[in-house]
Length: 335
Image (cartoon, rainbow, N blue to C red; front, side, top):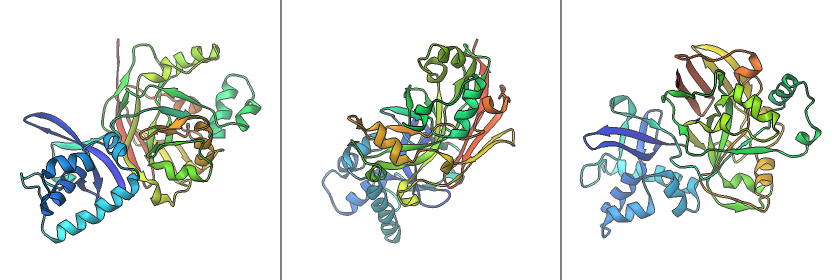
């Protein structure tokens, strides 16, 4: 299943709500769906009951649902049941579902509204080798022993179709084409085998980088920090991990700039499996719902590797098959 949040503009401002795709263009609002179900059952205060059982934001839902994937499967079947009964709205007239093509005031937002912790791994050997070659260094033997990662800002995430901010402190803004896993269930000291049951699903990640500042930061052997913290892009949907049989996906990854292919690789090119990554991250440490873990940049997946640089006004499209496309315009440098 594909999970996301949608934005709708109205007289009272912009609202953001959790939904899943029933087909290619039909979105089902989870909270309104369950409110309609409780109304049909004659429950006392169905609006409050739905707010408790099926909150309107993913971060809140994962706090009350022990198994997010089972919840979305149940919701999918419930939508079919209510549709057969002709129940398409709540009692106060809210649409349970709608077609994206029919609503000009509606668009997709980030598939996860609030992130607890953002860990970004460094697992694609081709990308790693080129990075160290540019510094005139060999790949450290430790890279082949542990799946290292860094932690970054959780507050700066933007969505598909948002303008990419160009911070004032860089002249070399870069994209990074990555697969990301969204944690749906808390866990500590996970094994490589059971780690997959803690992944709600996978999404596309663009870990933006200020390369000139990053170069200086890494000389200090600490970071990256400011060169990464200004923004990241995630979306457009989360595809639940059952779609990949709770295994590592093997998907084509592509980055296009103004329609031209710049980067291409596969999610399976990673040196480490997701089981290995999450087992390492969870050693004596809790992984919590809404944690996001990036795979690191796929080989050829950034301008730094290619010695090609995005410019203001460029259309940047990062695509992972079966998941979708992050489409953004590069903004004007902030002075």
